[in-house]
Amino acid sequence: MSRILITGANGFIGANIVRAALKNDYKVKAYVRKTSNLQTLKNLPIEYAYGDLRDTKALSNAMEDCEYIIHGGALYTFLPMWFWTDPQKIDEMYEVNVWATDRLMKRALEKGIEKVIFTSSESAVGMPSGDTLGDETRFATQEELPGHYKRSKYLGELVTLKWHRRGLATCSILPTVPIGPYDVKPTPTGRIIQDFMNGKMPGFVDTRMNIVHVRDVATAHVLAIENGISGERYIAGNKNMSFRDFLRLIADVAGKKAPYFSFPKILAQIFAFFDEFYSCTIQNKLPKTPLESVAAAEYRIFDCSKAWKELKMPRTNIRLAIKEQIEWFEKNGYLINRKK
Image (cartoon, rainbow, N blue to C red; front, side, top):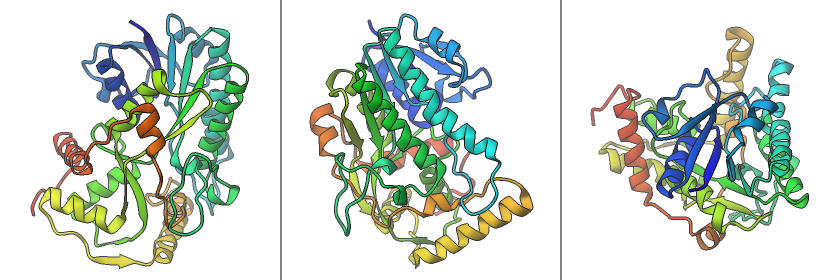
């Protein structure tokens, strides 16, 4: 039975990757920090290796007796775009998401790891003009990467391609907007569902995006071990839909009324600007609505057929993904208002 080293194993996507790997009869070694919250991995039959992604020695030792690596670990936070940010936090973002990835790939090649699967992001895809689907052939431009997190994930993917050219078998999985269980933080999309359920969403900005069950994203990572072509990137997504329709679907699943007031995008950006101003200059903390999260293109819709065909990635109904995320939130104390 082959063993996979999974970095970021306790995160939202990582915890689902662990379960997908176990379901596909792999042994799992989870690489986590000793201070990590392991709530999402509780009672799973897995082995642990402890260390920081920047700790090359610990990471190298964790690779022992592993045939494959799924590198899902990353520093996932949106830093302020318009106001002062501690330079150490910016450096840490690139050190973890780019240079630690570079060292991981180098050690993987030296140790004879058979394949490394890298978790990238749909933000690394360049979008064509108009209401046109993005695909794997397009890489994002500098203008399409407004914040440090998105830039770091893009650069991490370029590092992955570099090591492919040097002889290491690699694939990149680019999740779109995943939803589902084990969203501990929660993610920005998870907060949307949480706020909706808690009655804290009076209106919305109507955009278009691609929604996918996080379990399908996780399965795509595991399937890429056998089915993924080295050097290729795969957009792990499912359904393109407007934000308005997404909220209507949440409302239908939850038995609630959907918000009907749509804000212009410029208002959302103004709100995010002042949230950053207040949070960074007065409260000295990160904003709840960072500009980076609302500065993306108005349309982020994709052709995901490559992952469906080549990886055999499943496509779970989005209603079920919403239902499972709501149930997980309710079970774990994230919801304060369950009245219709």
